[in-house]
Image 1: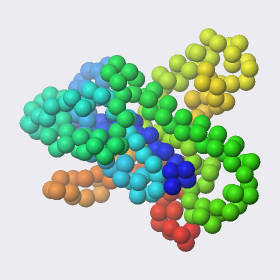
Image 2: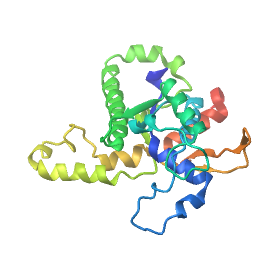
Image 3: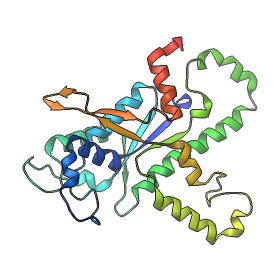
Length: 249
């Protein structure tokens, strides 16, 4: 049930661009301008988002992906065109994900990282509030023990962000805000949101890194990379074990 599963918020742009680079590593070497954005010479491939979504759904997690609204307006291009637009298959993939309700659109001009982090941290807030509320109903919780057996531990519920981004800009903004509002923070909170933990601390526990591996899989005549989230992350370790052993765990 949703109440007994974590929420994975996918940094859609991060996943889509990295999947494209994994399919064609040479694309990241096409520019000699060191200061140019590493994304400028690559085209996002939303199939990477699809692979990540399928992975977490198969392991009984809730999942959503934040993407720029501008992606919805991309026009398909031919594969031999050298612009930064998606090919027809990729645009269709994006539309499919949107129609299935997996995408959260970041408004034009807004910071999609901020939306990803806000969604994941709100889920953590909800879980903490629920834990405080249910602590007053221990008898009911004991009655539900049999139903809860085999589900993810409460310590691993809440929100997580899937990204290889360290979110340095967001961390710096929060730390600067702390300096600007020193008197407020002296009251015992670490952010203007009133949370006890800082974003830097939260990311250490709730950011999941990932990679894509070519293990020789072919889908519809094309190479399909395998999605590989950080196996050392506690949540991944837990859901992988439960996926392998199921009720025997």
